[in-house]
Length: 407
Image (cartoon, rainbow, N blue to C red; front, side, top):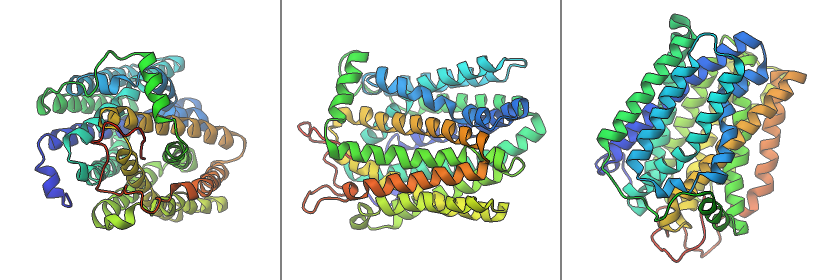
């Protein structure tokens, strides 16, 4: 499968694509509104960053306790339920006079629910598409994420000015309702991928199995840490340039979109597996320009180029699926998603703390330098082994006997 037309003709891909797109738009619009609301109320870069990315910190709890549900719940019902919970929670954040502890309690609760949602969505994607279609399918989904973020941050900036941050949060709640409808009425009822009830014990057993070898751990770390540190940089866009934060976010999303199109559609499969390290370095290096407190146009250019490097996740996720048994695909992708989002929350907290004591530009530079360092430390272990037989487009996920994972 090499064309988007083939992809869109695949049964159930389009409603899944629409549900994910609506949910991303909702996250984008409501996240910007919440960051502006909290920063206006507190003047704190740390609290503004945590309001936008703090739900990520709850993902580690979900990954440890709830992730077995990703393969043990009916996908359609789970996707619909998660979107409805986010709809209600986002509407609650718009209540006037809600105290700051209440705001963060809701944010963390939504993060806990969201820890299951990623595994359900992307496990279903792997189930819907043929073995050679996952990278292209995830590329198109990531393109949608980029487009929805570009449009969402642009629209969010307009809505915050026209409706107020609370009115924008209600618009985000409406988008979550659209995502719930697309999942409920567009997807067919499917049985869970794995038998048994979701439980903490089942989650721990599967996590231990997925984490059991050094090559898998290196790939997971490469998916989580460099990416998370750069999201920490992005969490400081509001304090770095309060009036232009929407522009910075929009161009970051545009760069991510460009990278996904290039890698997912135009880079030959034989090259994709070798691009992971280079793309991770590209993701971080341009942010080092923030050391000189650049003017906004230069900052926008650096952010756009850097965000092309987010396409590294396509390559690494393809390796994850090549090495994952089919019945664990949702859990494996959920562990990737939860670990990555948790790291993003941790990095946002670190970046906000650094900015409190230095400046947003300095904190961004430090986080970018750390991302480069981690990537270089992991680089050798990310190269595909000669003769390993695992290459993009030739997944081993259909082999139940295979115990290892790819990312």
